[in-house]
Length: 312
Image (cartoon, rainbow, N blue to C red; front, side, top):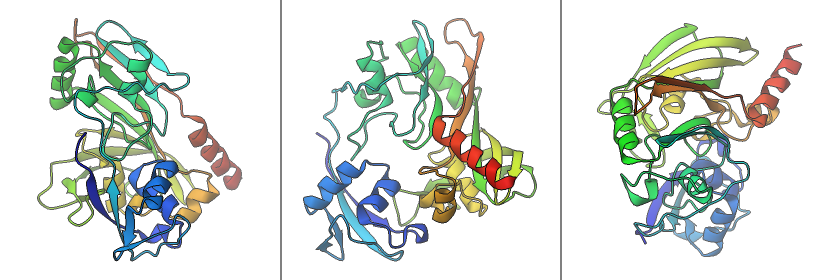
């Protein structure tokens, strides 16, 4: 097993007076059951004092949580999910439409289903390159992000796809619902990103961060929010979420990066409104261009219906 991790979590203003189990679940992307188990084991404290699962947090609270260890190296655990949505499959790679609530691969504290575990459980082959728990993974989507993801099934595909991502020849297009109205309506965000200097579960725009470039354009304007099409030139963790938050236009439902909880509740959205809509790359074997697109899942579609009703 890997070592357990101790994390310090700052409660953002949007989660003021939220139950501690719900707040930590939203911030860390872990299930409520996992969080409750840690609370009941005394692994969650404020100022050295254990908390109860129904205690309320304040926006200036600093919580410490001792996360459980991940599985031992070399162990790939099958985690079946109902209706694995396979968009494309051949001997080299598999493209799936990832549902929300599924992690790309195991990580500290995550006890739920993963993309690699689901693919493994469904009987598909995976490349063995990279860390054992990340077999075949050449790029990731956050637990709270839905949409298209490609996984390599052999070593040729893994190496080739990694090179394509590194050389920025992969086209990744997302749709996002951001608070407010962006001006200009089309633009580029060029701002370096790295770990938040004080809160390691978040990322931030920092002077010495990694180069990060996001292109956006407005698709539709609603009262108080804007539907955006976003294309990533780089692929940093939380890049879209961090860049839009830095512009003071956080994703609807993204409480970690400053979203208005009242707006998310009104639109019936309980995660960051972000969907990996399109994905295109060259096939590792013959270089033909493959392009895929997928529809919004039910929760995002419902939120747009609510917006349309409000706009009438």
